[in-house]
Length: 287
Ligand SMILES: Nc1nc(=O)c2c([nH]1)NC[C@@H]1CN(c3ccc(C(=O)N[C@@H](CCC(=O)O)C(=O)O)cc3)C=[N+]21
Image 1 (cartoon, rainbow, N blue to C red):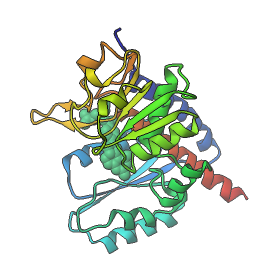
Image 2 (cartoon, helix red, strand yellow):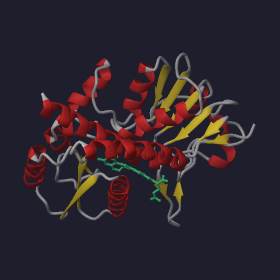
Image 3 (tube, rainbow, N blue to C red):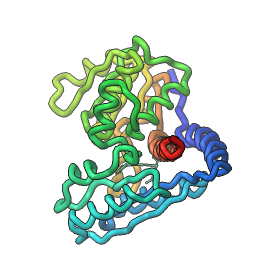
Image 4 (cartoon, rainbow, N blue to C red):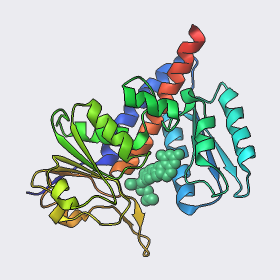
């Protein structure tokens, strides 16, 4: 079997066009969605992600404000910036680019973002809402992956989804979203024994462990859907996933590439959440 490649860029493009129309409608009502992105320090990967986010905003008509803060910024100063943005009416979404320098507590930062502006979906209120099945912001990467799976025409109900990775950003919310869609879910991680025995039971395999090229033909059952969340930069500067693409493409039925897979969808769902945040704020104002 040769896998059909799920084209993240094409799907992102389609969804962004829909969003753009929605944004134009909001603008006619006097609402321009606004996103603030805070970056602390100059980690090259973070700088390029932040630029990509700003460009994506610009392309679809979201106002974006980037705060470039120096590496030496104290936690207190950063929290003050967030509190300030929490109050600003033209800002509907706030994203603090991770990772942060070691002297700043990620937890303190995330907890300071107003939950209704937390477009990453990392605040405990949004995490809790996802857990209990209430409305709230859904983390962008897992949300984008659900859209990618749906784009194949497959449903999640009853399928066995195996997630590799248990991060708060991808693995855990991914598992929760799949559960919400009535899948049977298994979470594997670095301490999992006999990984390939478990992954071979997957109808849908989501790989988000951050180990370059870990997953190969021995891990994948014939006809599975394989989603590669890895973004690993090789010494040669090439971007590779957690999946050995060339091996797995002969076994899987659907496969996502890196680059051009989950990455562009992550940014798209950030735009989506920002529009949702703007609609929420507009509704609140009307009441
Ligand atoms: N608060 C916060 N929210 C995040 O959502 C967040 C974060 N911090 N820190 C870092 C990770 C990583 N991340 C990516 C987004 C887009 C691509 C992406 O578009 N990648 C392109 C390639 C880009 C390239 O060539 O470097 C692709 O896969 O095709 C990748 C990775 C968001 N993150």
